[in-house]
Length: 470
Ligand SMILES: Cc1cc2nc3c(=O)[nH]c(=O)nc-3n(C[C@H](O)[C@H](O)[C@H](O)COP(=O)(O)OP(=O)(O)OC[C@H]3O[C@@H](n4cnc5c(N)ncnc54)[C@H](O)[C@@H]3O)c2cc1C
Image 1 (cartoon, helix red, strand yellow):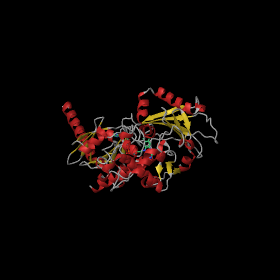
Image 2: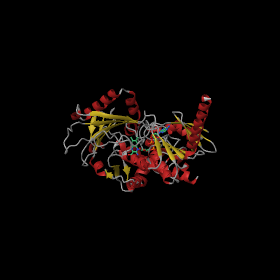
Image 3: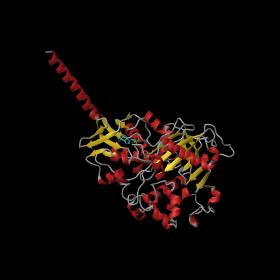
Image 4: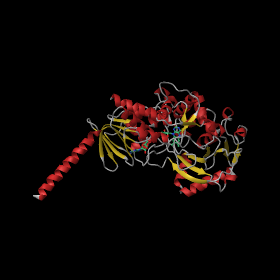
Protein backbone atom coordinates (compact mmCIF):
# COMPACT_ATOMS: atom_id res chain seq x y z
CA UNK A 1 0.00 0.00 0.00
CA UNK A 2 2.77 2.41 1.03
CA UNK A 3 4.78 1.38 -2.02
CA UNK A 4 1.77 1.96 -4.24
CA UNK A 5 1.23 5.42 -2.73
CA UNK A 6 4.92 6.18 -3.17
CA UNK A 7 4.81 5.19 -6.80
CA UNK A 8 1.69 7.35 -7.34
CA UNK A 9 3.53 10.29 -5.76
CA UNK A 10 6.62 9.49 -7.82
CA UNK A 11 4.39 9.30 -10.89
CA UNK A 12 2.85 12.69 -10.06
CA UNK A 13 6.30 14.17 -9.48
CA UNK A 14 7.46 12.72 -12.78
CA UNK A 15 4.38 14.08 -14.54
CA UNK A 16 5.00 17.49 -12.96
CA UNK A 17 8.64 17.38 -14.01
CA UNK A 18 7.73 16.28 -17.52
CA UNK A 19 5.11 19.02 -17.66
CA UNK A 20 7.66 21.57 -16.52
CA UNK A 21 10.09 20.27 -19.13
CA UNK A 22 7.41 20.41 -21.80
CA UNK A 23 6.62 23.98 -20.71
CA UNK A 24 10.35 24.78 -20.76
CA UNK A 25 10.45 23.12 -24.16
CA UNK A 26 7.99 25.70 -25.44
CA UNK A 27 9.36 28.50 -23.34
CA UNK A 28 11.84 30.25 -25.64
CA UNK A 29 11.06 32.10 -28.81
CA UNK A 30 14.76 32.21 -29.69
CA UNK A 31 17.91 30.58 -28.35
CA UNK A 32 21.10 32.45 -29.21
CA UNK A 33 24.33 30.44 -29.20
CA UNK A 34 27.29 32.65 -28.22
CA UNK A 35 27.51 35.76 -26.01
CA UNK A 36 29.96 37.73 -28.14
CA UNK A 37 28.88 41.14 -29.41
CA UNK A 38 26.74 39.75 -32.26
CA UNK A 39 24.89 37.26 -30.02
CA UNK A 40 24.30 39.74 -27.22
CA UNK A 41 23.02 42.43 -29.58
CA UNK A 42 20.70 39.96 -31.34
CA UNK A 43 19.28 38.85 -27.99
CA UNK A 44 18.88 42.45 -26.85
CA UNK A 45 16.93 43.43 -29.98
CA UNK A 46 14.67 40.35 -29.93
CA UNK A 47 13.95 40.77 -26.21
CA UNK A 48 13.10 44.45 -26.81
CA UNK A 49 10.44 43.22 -29.26
CA UNK A 50 8.88 41.03 -26.53
CA UNK A 51 10.53 37.72 -27.39
CA UNK A 52 11.58 35.29 -24.69
CA UNK A 53 15.28 34.76 -25.42
CA UNK A 54 17.94 32.50 -23.92
CA UNK A 55 21.67 32.94 -24.65
CA UNK A 56 23.97 29.97 -24.18
CA UNK A 57 27.65 30.86 -23.89
CA UNK A 58 30.38 28.23 -23.91
CA UNK A 59 32.98 30.08 -21.86
CA UNK A 60 32.85 31.59 -18.39
CA UNK A 61 32.82 35.16 -19.67
CA UNK A 62 30.81 37.25 -22.09
CA UNK A 63 32.23 39.40 -24.87
CA UNK A 64 34.05 36.77 -26.97
CA UNK A 65 36.64 38.67 -28.99
CA UNK A 66 36.11 41.79 -26.89
CA UNK A 67 38.35 41.15 -23.90
CA UNK A 68 39.75 43.94 -21.75
CA UNK A 69 42.55 42.96 -19.37
CA UNK A 70 41.21 44.80 -16.34
CA UNK A 71 43.99 43.65 -13.99
CA UNK A 72 46.69 45.44 -16.01
CA UNK A 73 47.50 49.17 -15.90
CA UNK A 74 45.55 51.18 -18.45
CA UNK A 75 43.06 48.34 -19.16
CA UNK A 76 44.77 47.10 -22.35
CA UNK A 77 42.68 45.17 -24.86
CA UNK A 78 43.46 41.55 -25.71
CA UNK A 79 40.67 41.68 -28.30
CA UNK A 80 38.94 44.50 -30.16
CA UNK A 81 40.85 47.79 -29.83
CA UNK A 82 39.04 50.66 -31.43
CA UNK A 83 35.66 51.90 -32.52
CA UNK A 84 36.19 53.98 -35.65
CA UNK A 85 34.40 57.13 -36.83
CA UNK A 86 32.04 55.31 -39.18
CA UNK A 87 30.87 52.79 -36.58
CA UNK A 88 27.34 54.22 -36.57
CA UNK A 89 25.78 51.21 -34.86
CA UNK A 90 28.47 50.81 -32.19
CA UNK A 91 28.70 54.52 -31.37
CA UNK A 92 24.92 54.79 -31.17
CA UNK A 93 24.69 51.68 -28.97
CA UNK A 94 27.31 53.08 -26.58
CA UNK A 95 25.32 56.33 -26.37
CA UNK A 96 22.07 54.43 -25.72
CA UNK A 97 23.73 52.38 -22.99
CA UNK A 98 25.27 55.50 -21.43
CA UNK A 99 28.85 54.39 -22.05
CA UNK A 100 31.26 57.32 -22.39
CA UNK A 101 33.93 57.05 -25.07
CA UNK A 102 37.49 58.33 -25.20
CA UNK A 103 38.80 59.71 -28.48
CA UNK A 104 42.22 58.06 -28.63
CA UNK A 105 43.25 59.57 -31.99
CA UNK A 106 45.56 62.12 -30.27
CA UNK A 107 47.37 59.16 -28.66
CA UNK A 108 47.88 57.53 -32.05
CA UNK A 109 49.45 60.77 -33.29
CA UNK A 110 52.00 60.65 -30.44
CA UNK A 111 53.03 57.10 -31.33
CA UNK A 112 56.23 56.60 -33.33
CA UNK A 113 57.14 53.27 -34.90
CA UNK A 114 60.74 52.23 -35.60
CA UNK A 115 61.63 49.28 -37.81
CA UNK A 116 64.06 46.57 -36.70
CA UNK A 117 65.25 44.67 -39.76
CA UNK A 118 68.18 42.26 -39.83
CA UNK A 119 69.04 43.44 -36.33
CA UNK A 120 69.32 47.08 -37.44
CA UNK A 121 67.02 49.73 -35.98
CA UNK A 122 65.73 52.08 -38.68
CA UNK A 123 63.56 55.15 -38.18
CA UNK A 124 60.76 55.82 -40.65
CA UNK A 125 62.64 58.94 -41.78
CA UNK A 126 65.55 56.71 -42.92
CA UNK A 127 63.48 53.85 -44.30
CA UNK A 128 63.02 55.09 -47.87
CA UNK A 129 66.76 55.25 -48.50
CA UNK A 130 67.77 52.30 -46.31
CA UNK A 131 69.76 49.55 -48.11
CA UNK A 132 67.52 47.11 -46.23
CA UNK A 133 64.43 48.41 -48.07
CA UNK A 134 63.55 45.85 -50.81
CA UNK A 135 60.47 47.70 -52.08
CA UNK A 136 60.24 49.04 -55.66
CA UNK A 137 60.48 52.83 -56.11
CA UNK A 138 56.70 53.41 -56.26
CA UNK A 139 56.13 51.90 -52.80
CA UNK A 140 59.50 52.55 -51.13
CA UNK A 141 58.31 55.26 -48.75
CA UNK A 142 55.60 53.08 -47.24
CA UNK A 143 56.21 51.37 -43.90
CA UNK A 144 56.10 47.59 -44.48
CA UNK A 145 52.88 47.30 -42.45
CA UNK A 146 51.07 49.68 -44.82
CA UNK A 147 52.17 48.00 -48.06
CA UNK A 148 49.53 45.23 -48.47
CA UNK A 149 46.41 47.36 -47.92
CA UNK A 150 47.79 50.35 -49.85
CA UNK A 151 48.66 48.21 -52.87
CA UNK A 152 45.32 46.37 -52.71
CA UNK A 153 43.40 49.67 -52.58
CA UNK A 154 45.42 51.46 -55.27
CA UNK A 155 45.69 48.69 -57.84
CA UNK A 156 42.16 47.23 -57.94
CA UNK A 157 38.57 48.48 -57.70
CA UNK A 158 35.53 46.73 -56.29
CA UNK A 159 32.43 46.33 -58.45
CA UNK A 160 28.83 45.40 -57.71
CA UNK A 161 26.58 45.49 -54.69
CA UNK A 162 29.06 44.41 -52.04
CA UNK A 163 32.72 43.43 -51.78
CA UNK A 164 32.05 39.71 -52.33
CA UNK A 165 29.71 40.28 -55.29
CA UNK A 166 30.34 37.56 -57.92
CA UNK A 167 31.29 40.43 -60.29
CA UNK A 168 34.49 40.66 -58.26
CA UNK A 169 35.45 37.02 -58.89
CA UNK A 170 38.42 38.05 -61.14
CA UNK A 171 39.91 39.74 -58.04
CA UNK A 172 39.55 36.58 -55.96
CA UNK A 173 43.24 35.74 -56.43
CA UNK A 174 46.12 35.28 -54.01
CA UNK A 175 47.51 38.49 -52.52
CA UNK A 176 50.98 37.20 -53.49
CA UNK A 177 49.96 37.55 -57.15
CA UNK A 178 48.64 41.07 -56.58
CA UNK A 179 51.93 42.08 -54.93
CA UNK A 180 53.96 40.52 -57.76
CA UNK A 181 51.89 42.48 -60.28
CA UNK A 182 52.68 45.66 -58.33
CA UNK A 183 56.38 44.93 -58.91
CA UNK A 184 57.35 43.39 -55.56
CA UNK A 185 60.16 40.81 -55.59
CA UNK A 186 59.87 37.63 -53.48
CA UNK A 187 62.13 39.30 -50.88
CA UNK A 188 59.87 42.38 -50.78
CA UNK A 189 56.73 40.21 -50.41
CA UNK A 190 58.43 38.29 -47.66
CA UNK A 191 59.23 41.42 -45.71
CA UNK A 192 56.13 43.51 -46.41
CA UNK A 193 53.54 40.74 -46.09
CA UNK A 194 54.81 37.47 -44.67
CA UNK A 195 56.87 38.84 -41.76
CA UNK A 196 53.98 40.25 -39.73
CA UNK A 197 50.88 39.30 -41.72
CA UNK A 198 47.47 40.70 -40.91
CA UNK A 199 45.57 38.01 -42.79
CA UNK A 200 46.70 34.40 -43.20
CA UNK A 201 50.14 32.86 -42.69
CA UNK A 202 51.47 34.45 -45.85
CA UNK A 203 50.32 36.42 -48.88
CA UNK A 204 49.32 33.29 -50.83
CA UNK A 205 46.76 32.34 -48.16
CA UNK A 206 44.53 35.40 -48.49
CA UNK A 207 42.44 36.68 -51.37
CA UNK A 208 43.11 40.14 -52.81
CA UNK A 209 39.33 40.55 -52.51
CA UNK A 210 39.54 40.14 -48.71
CA UNK A 211 42.16 42.91 -48.52
CA UNK A 212 40.12 45.12 -50.84
CA UNK A 213 37.20 44.78 -48.43
CA UNK A 214 39.50 45.81 -45.56
CA UNK A 215 41.03 48.74 -47.42
CA UNK A 216 37.68 50.08 -48.66
CA UNK A 217 36.24 49.71 -45.14
CA UNK A 218 39.14 51.71 -43.65
CA UNK A 219 38.80 54.33 -46.41
CA UNK A 220 35.16 54.77 -45.39
CA UNK A 221 36.19 55.11 -41.75
CA UNK A 222 38.75 57.79 -42.64
CA UNK A 223 36.15 59.62 -44.73
CA UNK A 224 33.78 59.48 -41.75
CA UNK A 225 36.18 61.45 -39.56
CA UNK A 226 39.22 59.23 -39.05
CA UNK A 227 38.94 59.05 -35.26
CA UNK A 228 39.58 56.08 -32.96
CA UNK A 229 37.51 55.58 -29.82
CA UNK A 230 37.63 53.21 -26.89
CA UNK A 231 34.97 52.75 -24.25
CA UNK A 232 36.02 54.46 -21.02
CA UNK A 233 37.42 51.77 -18.74
CA UNK A 234 37.81 49.27 -21.60
CA UNK A 235 35.73 47.90 -24.47
CA UNK A 236 34.56 45.02 -22.24
CA UNK A 237 32.15 47.53 -20.68
CA UNK A 238 30.07 47.33 -23.91
CA UNK A 239 29.10 43.62 -23.70
CA UNK A 240 28.72 44.02 -19.93
CA UNK A 241 26.28 46.91 -20.39
CA UNK A 242 24.23 44.95 -22.95
CA UNK A 243 24.08 41.93 -20.63
CA UNK A 244 23.07 44.13 -17.69
CA UNK A 245 20.23 45.89 -19.49
CA UNK A 246 18.83 43.26 -21.85
CA UNK A 247 15.74 41.30 -20.89
CA UNK A 248 17.16 37.97 -22.15
CA UNK A 249 18.30 35.04 -19.99
CA UNK A 250 22.03 34.24 -20.14
CA UNK A 251 23.83 31.06 -19.16
CA UNK A 252 27.64 30.92 -19.08
CA UNK A 253 29.80 27.77 -19.23
CA UNK A 254 27.19 26.08 -21.43
CA UNK A 255 28.66 25.00 -24.77
CA UNK A 256 26.14 23.90 -27.36
CA UNK A 257 26.88 20.51 -28.94
CA UNK A 258 23.93 19.87 -31.26
CA UNK A 259 21.06 21.63 -33.02
CA UNK A 260 18.14 19.58 -34.39
CA UNK A 261 15.22 21.17 -36.18
CA UNK A 262 11.83 19.96 -37.35
CA UNK A 263 8.76 21.75 -38.64
CA UNK A 264 7.63 22.60 -35.07
CA UNK A 265 10.82 24.12 -33.74
CA UNK A 266 14.47 23.60 -32.86
CA UNK A 267 16.04 21.51 -30.13
CA UNK A 268 19.41 22.61 -28.78
CA UNK A 269 21.52 20.07 -26.88
CA UNK A 270 24.21 21.38 -24.59
CA UNK A 271 27.53 19.60 -24.07
CA UNK A 272 26.19 18.69 -20.61
CA UNK A 273 23.27 16.82 -22.24
CA UNK A 274 20.49 19.31 -21.47
CA UNK A 275 17.85 19.68 -24.19
CA UNK A 276 16.16 23.03 -24.76
CA UNK A 277 13.59 24.03 -27.36
CA UNK A 278 12.81 27.25 -29.14
CA UNK A 279 10.98 28.39 -32.24
CA UNK A 280 14.25 29.65 -33.73
CA UNK A 281 17.98 29.43 -33.05
CA UNK A 282 20.73 31.95 -33.81
CA UNK A 283 24.30 30.69 -34.20
CA UNK A 284 26.45 33.68 -33.18
CA UNK A 285 29.71 31.73 -33.14
CA UNK A 286 32.79 31.87 -35.40
CA UNK A 287 33.08 29.39 -38.27
CA UNK A 288 35.47 26.90 -36.58
CA UNK A 289 33.25 26.37 -33.49
CA UNK A 290 30.20 26.32 -35.81
CA UNK A 291 31.72 23.30 -37.59
CA UNK A 292 31.93 21.41 -34.29
CA UNK A 293 28.18 21.70 -33.60
CA UNK A 294 26.21 18.67 -34.92
CA UNK A 295 23.33 19.90 -37.08
CA UNK A 296 20.33 17.78 -38.05
CA UNK A 297 19.51 18.30 -40.87
CA UNK A 298 23.16 19.02 -41.70
CA UNK A 299 24.42 22.50 -42.55
CA UNK A 300 23.90 23.52 -46.20
CA UNK A 301 26.99 22.72 -48.35
CA UNK A 302 28.46 26.25 -48.48
CA UNK A 303 28.02 26.81 -44.72
CA UNK A 304 29.70 23.44 -44.13
CA UNK A 305 32.53 24.23 -46.55
CA UNK A 306 33.16 27.58 -44.82
CA UNK A 307 33.08 26.00 -41.34
CA UNK A 308 35.57 23.36 -42.50
CA UNK A 309 37.99 25.41 -44.52
CA UNK A 310 38.02 29.16 -43.79
CA UNK A 311 41.16 29.85 -41.74
CA UNK A 312 41.11 32.21 -38.78
CA UNK A 313 44.01 34.55 -38.11
CA UNK A 314 46.56 33.34 -35.57
CA UNK A 315 47.27 36.19 -33.15
CA UNK A 316 49.16 35.80 -29.90
CA UNK A 317 49.70 38.73 -27.59
CA UNK A 318 52.14 39.17 -24.73
CA UNK A 319 51.09 42.04 -22.45
CA UNK A 320 54.18 43.59 -20.95
CA UNK A 321 54.58 46.05 -18.09
CA UNK A 322 57.43 48.06 -16.60
CA UNK A 323 56.91 48.11 -12.85
CA UNK A 324 58.82 51.41 -12.79
CA UNK A 325 58.89 53.45 -16.00
CA UNK A 326 62.54 53.84 -17.05
CA UNK A 327 62.05 56.34 -19.86
CA UNK A 328 61.52 60.06 -19.72
CA UNK A 329 58.40 61.87 -20.84
CA UNK A 330 60.33 63.80 -23.51
CA UNK A 331 61.86 60.59 -24.95
CA UNK A 332 59.06 58.01 -24.84
CA UNK A 333 59.78 54.54 -26.21
CA UNK A 334 58.80 53.92 -29.81
CA UNK A 335 56.59 51.08 -30.97
CA UNK A 336 58.58 48.51 -32.94
CA UNK A 337 57.91 46.64 -36.20
CA UNK A 338 60.47 43.85 -36.35
CA UNK A 339 61.49 40.92 -38.54
CA UNK A 340 62.65 39.22 -35.33
CA UNK A 341 60.71 36.66 -33.25
CA UNK A 342 59.20 39.57 -31.29
CA UNK A 343 56.74 40.46 -34.06
CA UNK A 344 55.55 43.99 -33.39
CA UNK A 345 55.58 45.90 -30.12
CA UNK A 346 52.91 48.52 -29.43
CA UNK A 347 53.35 51.08 -26.68
CA UNK A 348 49.86 51.41 -25.11
CA UNK A 349 48.69 54.81 -23.90
CA UNK A 350 45.89 54.11 -21.43
CA UNK A 351 46.64 56.63 -18.70
CA UNK A 352 45.19 59.85 -17.42
CA UNK A 353 47.05 61.86 -20.07
CA UNK A 354 47.37 61.00 -23.75
CA UNK A 355 51.14 60.76 -23.43
CA UNK A 356 51.34 58.28 -20.55
CA UNK A 357 52.52 54.81 -21.60
CA UNK A 358 50.83 52.25 -19.36
CA UNK A 359 51.87 48.93 -20.93
CA UNK A 360 53.19 47.32 -24.11
CA UNK A 361 51.72 44.60 -26.30
CA UNK A 362 53.93 42.27 -28.34
CA UNK A 363 51.77 41.06 -31.25
CA UNK A 364 52.81 37.79 -32.88
CA UNK A 365 50.96 36.92 -36.05
CA UNK A 366 50.61 33.91 -38.32
CA UNK A 367 53.42 31.35 -38.18
CA UNK A 368 55.25 33.26 -35.41
CA UNK A 369 52.13 33.10 -33.21
CA UNK A 370 51.84 29.36 -33.88
CA UNK A 371 55.52 28.81 -33.03
CA UNK A 372 55.20 30.71 -29.75
CA UNK A 373 51.93 28.89 -28.95
CA UNK A 374 53.81 25.59 -29.23
CA UNK A 375 56.57 26.69 -26.80
CA UNK A 376 56.40 26.60 -23.00
CA UNK A 377 54.98 29.99 -21.99
CA UNK A 378 58.09 31.04 -20.03
CA UNK A 379 60.36 30.32 -23.00
CA UNK A 380 58.10 32.30 -25.32
CA UNK A 381 58.10 35.26 -22.91
CA UNK A 382 61.90 35.13 -22.55
CA UNK A 383 62.30 35.10 -26.34
CA UNK A 384 60.06 38.16 -26.68
CA UNK A 385 61.75 40.15 -23.89
CA UNK A 386 65.22 39.25 -25.27
CA UNK A 387 64.17 40.42 -28.73
CA UNK A 388 62.88 43.71 -27.33
CA UNK A 389 66.09 44.19 -25.34
CA UNK A 390 68.22 43.72 -28.47
CA UNK A 391 66.34 46.58 -30.15
CA UNK A 392 65.95 48.62 -26.98
CA UNK A 393 68.88 47.80 -24.65
CA UNK A 394 67.59 50.01 -21.82
CA UNK A 395 64.62 47.66 -21.43
CA UNK A 396 66.71 44.62 -20.44
CA UNK A 397 65.59 43.36 -17.04
CA UNK A 398 63.06 46.19 -16.67
CA UNK A 399 60.04 44.64 -18.42
CA UNK A 400 57.95 41.61 -17.50
CA UNK A 401 55.22 39.71 -19.31
CA UNK A 402 52.13 40.18 -17.16
CA UNK A 403 49.62 38.27 -19.35
CA UNK A 404 49.47 36.39 -22.62
CA UNK A 405 46.51 35.54 -24.82
CA UNK A 406 46.37 33.39 -27.93
CA UNK A 407 43.27 33.64 -30.09
CA UNK A 408 44.25 30.57 -32.13
CA UNK A 409 44.46 28.07 -29.29
CA UNK A 410 41.27 29.08 -27.48
CA UNK A 411 38.49 26.56 -28.27
CA UNK A 412 35.67 29.01 -28.88
CA UNK A 413 37.14 31.31 -31.56
CA UNK A 414 39.86 29.46 -33.49
CA UNK A 415 41.58 32.75 -34.31
CA UNK A 416 41.14 36.50 -34.35
CA UNK A 417 39.13 36.96 -37.57
CA UNK A 418 38.08 35.05 -40.68
CA UNK A 419 40.61 35.04 -43.52
CA UNK A 420 39.02 34.42 -46.92
CA UNK A 421 41.38 32.39 -49.08
CA UNK A 422 41.75 32.88 -52.85
CA UNK A 423 38.68 31.29 -54.44
CA UNK A 424 36.61 31.59 -51.23
CA UNK A 425 36.10 35.36 -51.07
CA UNK A 426 33.70 35.62 -54.02
CA UNK A 427 31.74 32.47 -53.09
CA UNK A 428 31.40 31.96 -49.34
CA UNK A 429 30.86 35.24 -47.40
CA UNK A 430 27.33 35.79 -48.77
CA UNK A 431 26.37 32.18 -48.07
CA UNK A 432 27.48 31.92 -44.45
CA UNK A 433 24.70 34.27 -43.32
CA UNK A 434 21.91 32.46 -45.22
CA UNK A 435 19.02 31.09 -43.13
CA UNK A 436 18.85 27.28 -42.74
CA UNK A 437 15.19 26.53 -41.95
CA UNK A 438 14.71 27.80 -38.39
CA UNK A 439 18.43 28.34 -37.80
CA UNK A 440 20.02 31.76 -38.39
CA UNK A 441 23.69 32.77 -38.52
CA UNK A 442 25.42 35.95 -37.46
CA UNK A 443 28.89 37.08 -36.39
CA UNK A 444 31.67 39.24 -37.79
CA UNK A 445 32.40 36.75 -40.61
CA UNK A 446 28.86 37.10 -42.01
CA UNK A 447 28.80 40.91 -42.31
CA UNK A 448 28.86 42.26 -45.86
CA UNK A 449 29.39 46.00 -45.28
CA UNK A 450 31.24 46.49 -42.04
CA UNK A 451 34.07 44.70 -40.28
CA UNK A 452 35.06 43.92 -36.70
CA UNK A 453 32.68 45.03 -33.94
CA UNK A 454 30.61 47.08 -36.38
CA UNK A 455 30.33 44.00 -38.61
CA UNK A 456 29.19 41.90 -35.63
CA UNK A 457 26.45 44.50 -34.95
CA UNK A 458 25.49 44.66 -38.65
CA UNK A 459 25.02 40.89 -38.68
CA UNK A 460 22.98 41.01 -35.45
CA UNK A 461 20.57 43.51 -37.02
CA UNK A 462 20.15 41.30 -40.08
CA UNK A 463 19.35 38.24 -38.01
CA UNK A 464 16.95 40.06 -35.67
CA UNK A 465 15.01 41.35 -38.68
CA UNK A 466 14.99 37.86 -40.28
CA UNK A 467 13.46 36.42 -37.12
CA UNK A 468 10.95 39.18 -36.48
CA UNK A 469 9.68 39.01 -40.08
CA UNK A 470 9.59 35.18 -40.19
C1 LIG B 1 43.19 40.86 -31.26
C2 LIG B 1 41.95 41.42 -31.87
C3 LIG B 1 41.88 42.76 -32.22
C4 LIG B 1 40.72 43.27 -32.78
N1 LIG B 1 40.65 44.61 -33.04
C5 LIG B 1 39.48 45.15 -33.44
C6 LIG B 1 39.33 46.56 -33.55
O1 LIG B 1 40.23 47.33 -33.25
N2 LIG B 1 38.13 47.04 -33.98
C7 LIG B 1 37.08 46.21 -34.28
O2 LIG B 1 36.02 46.70 -34.66
N3 LIG B 1 37.18 44.88 -34.16
C8 LIG B 1 38.35 44.32 -33.74
N4 LIG B 1 38.46 42.97 -33.57
C9 LIG B 1 37.37 42.11 -34.04
C10 LIG B 1 36.17 42.06 -33.07
O3 LIG B 1 36.63 41.77 -31.78
C11 LIG B 1 35.23 40.95 -33.53
O4 LIG B 1 34.93 41.11 -34.90
C12 LIG B 1 33.90 40.89 -32.79
O5 LIG B 1 34.07 41.11 -31.41
C13 LIG B 1 33.30 39.52 -33.08
O6 LIG B 1 32.07 39.36 -32.41
P1 LIG B 1 31.22 38.05 -32.74
O7 LIG B 1 30.01 38.13 -31.92
O8 LIG B 1 31.10 37.89 -34.20
O9 LIG B 1 32.14 36.80 -32.29
P2 LIG B 1 32.80 36.44 -30.89
O10 LIG B 1 33.16 37.66 -30.14
O11 LIG B 1 33.88 35.48 -31.19
O12 LIG B 1 31.65 35.71 -30.07
C14 LIG B 1 31.32 34.35 -30.27
C15 LIG B 1 30.92 33.75 -28.92
O13 LIG B 1 30.44 32.42 -29.15
C16 LIG B 1 30.91 31.59 -28.10
N5 LIG B 1 30.84 30.20 -28.57
C17 LIG B 1 31.60 29.60 -29.51
N6 LIG B 1 31.21 28.33 -29.69
C18 LIG B 1 30.16 28.12 -28.86
C19 LIG B 1 29.31 27.01 -28.59
N7 LIG B 1 29.45 25.82 -29.22
N8 LIG B 1 28.31 27.15 -27.66
C20 LIG B 1 28.13 28.33 -27.01
N9 LIG B 1 28.91 29.41 -27.21
C21 LIG B 1 29.91 29.31 -28.14
C22 LIG B 1 32.31 32.12 -27.82
O14 LIG B 1 32.79 31.73 -26.56
C23 LIG B 1 32.10 33.63 -27.95
O15 LIG B 1 31.75 34.22 -26.71
C24 LIG B 1 39.61 42.43 -33.01
C25 LIG B 1 39.67 41.08 -32.66
C26 LIG B 1 40.83 40.57 -32.09
C27 LIG B 1 40.87 39.13 -31.68
